[in-house]
Length: 144
Image (cartoon, rainbow, N blue to C red):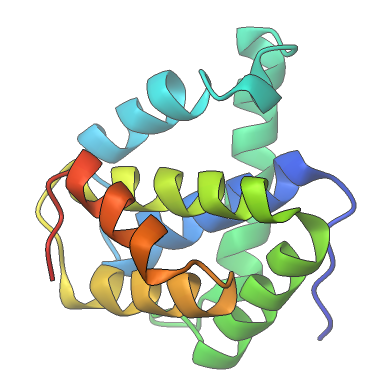
């Protein structure tokens, strides 16, 4: 399966949902972050709340079908395909912003092993330099 994103919005939301489902339990804090902090990213400012909610819901369905196996565990190969597709779709500034968003979602509740592993894959796959990653981590008080 080849994953491709035509729109930056889809790339952002795919990463968001991968983080949310990484621990197999999307928390209320993560969902609230999606509807407050992620919605406030400039890219999403042009959408009404209803339009944004519809995009989030549509990507949730796609993410579950694309990234998860039957037991709800992220499929490593699909995650790597998703990261490559996000990297192809976004410029370097947007890659840093999507990484910032991912760290924010992961840090809003208790970090799990799967989220930490996914953040490491995102940092590497999106070519986020160590200096930029450290700044993002400080912003969310996330230290490895």
